[in-house]
Length: 305
Ligand SMILES: Nc1ncnc2c1ncn2[C@@H]1O[C@H](COP(=O)(O)OP(=O)(O)O)[C@@H](O)[C@H]1O
Ligand SMILES: [Mg+2]
Image (cartoon, rainbow, N blue to C red; front, top):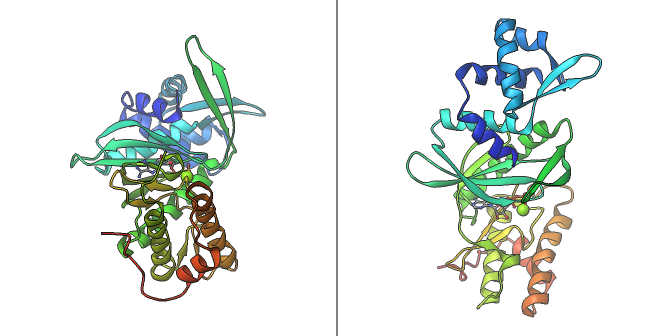
């Protein structure tokens, strides 16, 4: 079961005191990888008996893990961090019900959820520092357990924030990206989008139009938001059912004033162009793409309605 599934299942059973205890542990994890009971007690201001009662249940439900080294300590699991983020989103009326997985990337797990206005939203749980995983065979299927570096949560929080800020700049400029809704801890909430990664699309009726539309969006991002994606590839471009594209996955975006801006925009464009050349025989040239994107001329939006 994934961390998010564990978090959602446990979340339903949590009492306000459990949330408070998890929050106290989260706070103490700034000081300790595994916090001793004393520190948890001070932070939460609960009686020891309350902690003795609640900790084993939180461990049983997969939100907390114990550790025995020079001392005995307790830390939040990935699911524990996820549960706190979900709690914050429910409290803030951003989500009301939890849905299904939408995608698992190298550095994220993406789920859908229902907002109070009945809109579907996507929750991207950032997982920077997910190092390795173990596949274990259960009776009928496999379960995958990941390991994380100790500072994964800190890194993931930074990553979620960076992506949220990037989308906040890009979306109002008209770049084809999901609409940013909220960021809390390591989770980014955005509009749910339909379609599939360009890479997985079996065939394109008009590859040139799709390529042109990608370039015009890369250009608006560059010219109007001063931003370079930095990890552009056919995996981070979604083709929607109406054949228009969306560019996703922006946490590593950099400013056009970045010292490596030139290399990064060239690499982004090369990744896209090579794909279209190999798969669809497009004859466009990289220099032209770079000039088109980086020169401040009127953006050609003919590929869009
Ligand atoms: N807003 C969204 N709506 C629906 N699915 C999404 C959304 N954002 C991401 N996904 C799905 O999750 C996958 C991983 O997202 P991505 O942002 O590329 O993260 P990663 O850094 O893990 O590659 C995507 O390939 C896509 O299938
Ligand atoms: Mg991606």
